Amino acid sequence: MSYQDEPSCYGASFPKDFSYGPFEQNGEGDNTSLQEDHKPRILLMGLRRSGKSSIQKVVFHKMSPNETLFLESTNKIVKDDINNSSFVQFQIWDFPGQIDFFDPTFDSDTIFGGCGALVFVIDAQDDYQDALEKLQLTVTKAYRVNNNIKFEVFIHKVDGLNDDYKMESQRDIHHRATEDLAEAGLEHVHLSFHLTSIYDHSIFEAFSKVVQKLIPQLPTLENLLNILISNSGIEKAFLFDVVSKIYIATDSSPVDMQSYELCCDMIDVVIDISCIYGMVDETDVNTFNNQSSSLIKLNNGTVLYLREVNKFLALVCILREENFQKQGVIDYNFLCFRDAITQVFELRNKCQNALTMVRARSGTPEAIPNGAADSTESTSDHSQVIQLP
Image (cartoon, rainbow, N blue to C red):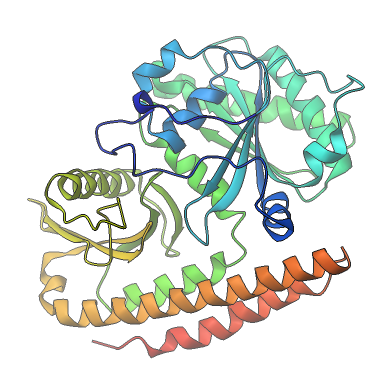
């Protein structure tokens, strides 16, 4: 069960070649299979026609929101493998809305055992009583199998609602869902709620927060970004996955939705221009490479500055125009930041390889996760080399 890429699934900002790889059902060896089996898994669940498949196609396959109107209802589990960078590696499983947890063929241990996050989608434009009942049943079943799952609730299709009704719906759903869990004896289970729509950037921001919870190195990345902005006169910095426009990390200052949307639009502009005018190597179809950078000056004195980190990651900074006069310092600090990110990649890859070997030999990977914490600490020390202006 895999989603096959189709040419019509890509918007104008991304050519067909600039995408994720297809989901591989069978690994090319034991180690590959083990690595795929143990990737964090995100489950998309909810009632029929709640918008689950539309979310997956828009965020990860660049389908135009208007094209999702022609999607057929999902009638089987659709698996999608996201493997574009060392930080963003996970599987998305899109479940049909009519799935029955009490069906003897439904293997709860297999489904929920390797799950990192469960995203439950509720249609805010419909009566959500049945959806809340299904949410309570889903959370109860999943938590009994795996109490480490992160539960996320997308209150979806809010684009057609006014602001007052959006907030009222969120409060009502939050209150009723919490009460239902308390009655089931799961008052300690935490649910995160997000107002989303595929017609604006809210779905990308919501998925960003979901993915971040699956990245063990997130504190290290935030620390590196904090050091970078404090020494470079930068107001806000995002580390973006270029393909999906999910930000996998940002600094500790609050995220302003308007700033996030500006950064997303900037990435679209860079990809558009790169695909038209960029140099394409014979061995690499993607025009986003280590030479990619962009500078946009807004009429309010704000500067947007983009630099490539690796093939699929970009750093997008927001700063005042007067602070950009020291561009040489900013560029040097960025190089130090990129070196630190590279070290985090290397340490994580070593940890994953060691974990794979342990699983292959004994199937008891207990000592490896502690090593991941050690790699975080050592990389944080390296971040101190960023030059002061």
